[in-house]
Image (cartoon, rainbow, N blue to C red; front, top):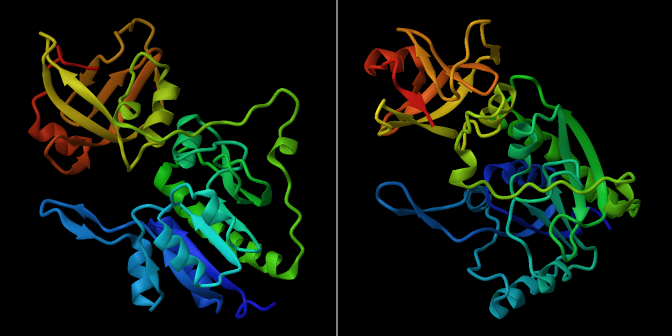
Length: 326
């Protein structure tokens, strides 16, 4: 079977998936249909917005399916009508068994972690938030439990000391697209030898979860060590962004800040013992106390305003010594 003869259905939604889809199309692979999320209202006007994958598919004349329910019989029959031998899933919803078992060559997923580490919805975020120095991409065949299928290929990627989620996302997006092509070629050639994830765990190891990020996940806990807060902020920047509340002396909320970038953790001075969340500011710099040191805030966004450097924020915000973060 050649790449022109192999019929592929591609499942995906965000820009992370577009890179792989474009590689397939540009490489002459036979993508017969694309499945993506239904259009969703967004913005002030709540106008319907297409997913990144849909925009690409429409621009390149690919048939697009947007089922509300993946278990809908009409959708399943339409999908079956394309006669695809292989499904590829990248950054999409969990597929029902009736869908992922449909193609004779299987359904594989590209996941942005070195499985079995970071199974779940937010693998890049959690790898950076946990201070890891390495992550990567994995292709694996789907099975019942999410992100547990047999591994086809893996490739690692370093996480730099100052990298944030956007940096790692962009690297893994390109690396993952390379691996998708390699995986499809291996499937065509019949050289794939999948490895069960249980065999990849050494004695005593367990798979690492990477659950969905919620608003409360993003709130900064200043009682943690500065190193952990530093990683927490990197792991949520630029989206959805770590946040904190500034309180006045009476404990009333003054404003909310999203924090995108900080300097390296700085230890307290010998005579310093501030409470976590204590603020030290002058006209150009803003430092906030953690459990064991300071973090200097470099970029932030006040509620209702644009993202800016800290010195610009301090020119328009009166910071008093009695204010603190929580």
